Image 1 (tube, helix red, strand yellow):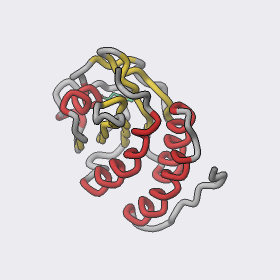
Image 2 (cartoon, protein in one colour):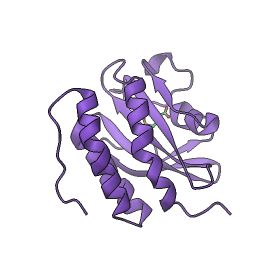
Image 3 (cartoon, protein in one colour):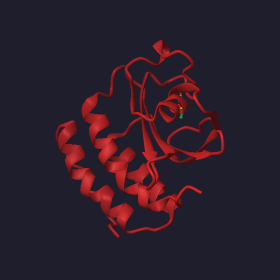
Image 4 (cartoon, helix red, strand yellow):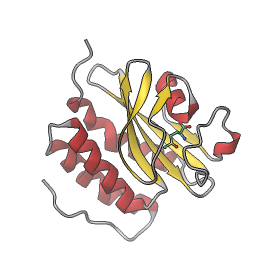
Length: 164
Ligand code: SME
């Protein structure tokens, strides 16, 4: 397993290009889901220094807080609620340029201004978790983030127990 994270000092795309293989190596090197998510939240946060970077896990009809980096956060989010619950319900990545303009946004931190939430699917294609990233600046995320973040989390599918 990688012990050092190499952070590229270039554009956002260059940072993602350097991070992508390292993130995949972290996932491939660990069979425990929580251990992999913990290191992944660190690798993302260390690379980009966002306000909040972390995971919520699908448990029944709720998302429950998982490994993260940043200020303390809401522990449970109902299906369909907020950006996280909406990304889960819609089974698609949501880019929110201004959280105040998103109906039902859940403000875990008053400093959050923009957000991206990426569904993480199990091997059967069912949403099993979400990656939630909050920024203290407006419009921090675009399609480049969505594309790379989706690629970064895709191999996590192998770590979820198959749906019953
Ligand atoms: N803002 C999120 C809630 C999670 S926290 O920001 C960490 C939402 O609306 O789903």
